[in-house]
Length: 224
Ligand code: DC
Image (cartoon, protein in one colour):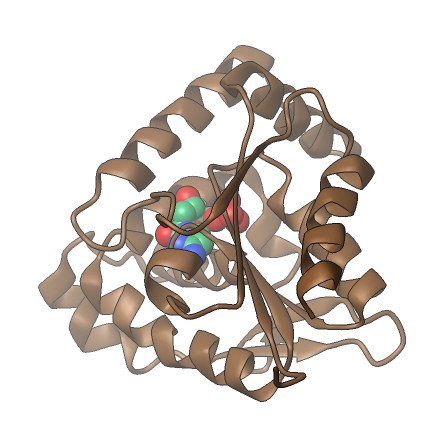
């Protein structure tokens, strides 16, 4: 088998995808692409420029935005740029989540981000997390996982994360937002959140991030 490989991790928000993907990236020494960050960057641009949530209109605007991904040489941390502006922190703000989710449902947005994701995956052994990596972006990924957790557990994680970032948050609101996003991400017409038929499903509700990562790493190592 060739040494180049990709790992797809899909699942709803708060299932622990990014935490696990970061552990995999450092333990397996592969690149981590957080694809949600790309949709968030589009959401941020849409918010700032007051884009209408309309595929025809966005199709005419999306080509003008320059989204790039870079990696910190020392820490390996992913940075996302809109033009020359590093928006990595800004896109984590809670209001951007809704914009990212709504604009990610537009076919023109998904099409615009597809080649960037595929290029990075083709160039590097990598782990990509998102909603449609195993089903659509990388249907031939060597390893596919679908990570889930109950909505209570996911809301509690998101709440803790927001507080840790110094943002204000209300748990019930966070939970409602998560459930609303789940619904929107799973029911949209293009590339909805869905388990690939050949993905291994892992429920992280009762597991620590290290336990989940360990499961994945042992599966990956056994087949490399
Ligand atoms: O994983 P996240 O919460 O940062 O993602 C932000 C939004 O982007 C999420 O609501 C759904 C969307 N998304 C997507 O549609 N496809 C992906 N591969 C990744 C994220």
